[in-house]
Length: 373
Ligand SMILES: [Zn+2]
Ligand SMILES: [Zn+2]
Image: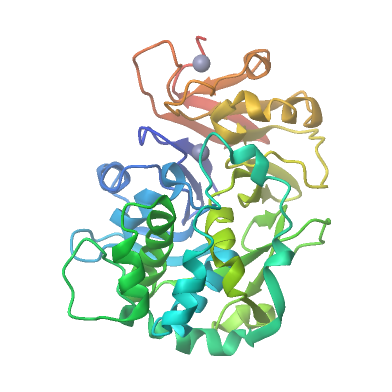
């Protein structure tokens, strides 16, 4: 059975295709709503078995909006894997959409801003502090989520609905928080409309003996919940309830690089791909690889994540870096890796697709040239 890996020139952000036999996986979707769809159509891909969204940074998540819109594209997505934090945020917004007091309480916390400049300060936050003791069972999440279309997500569009959430999102339509919130709600609601199965992953600090899900092993999260989906009922658990004073924090944390979901993909008995997303990889897990593996450079090879190159060891690692326009991206430590590929070398004006095939236990480059930086 063939296994291939492709880094797509989306052009900015992460978007990786993994084809294993007749199954197609998409890890992140780049920052452009239309580009990912065009690239997949050009490859005659009409079905993604599992789409994974690592976190709420637009350069990883925005493409999913275009991809999930049913009207303009025929690409089916069977399952989508999302951070549990998104589920708690959406659930909270649905349950409290009409409660004026809740949204005025939330307003008081809007200054807890997160942006590229202060993103490091948010890394140490403990997600568990967002929650009280209340929770809802996973089996009830489905019913709540079915109601998602009743929260108004399009603040730019005139709407007859006039609930407290709508008022809030209109009033702060230019606030980055509302932008992040709308991104989450749009992806979740489109996934529901499209009939995707949704599997949520909870960030964890300690190593967890994870089950394979297809060939994937989550390294810093574990699946918590999926409603009524056959095999996956084994994961049915509960979703913790956010406190309103932590709502803003939760939405901000949804975009913090540190909490990006990281997965390994295994073939037979070895890990063959590690999808790092933007994670700083400080979570406790094994980091020594003894066989051929593709590792996506965290945060597009950013110097902020340079410590990962001293943590991750192996003589047969192929590093793949995607493009990000921010100038702090591109660290010298990455450039010392012997075997590396860039979707776009920052100094060159060329975007390329990078494609590997797994043959006899080794990744072979099929097209795409190695890094010229
Ligand atoms: Zn990124
Ligand atoms: Zn390069």
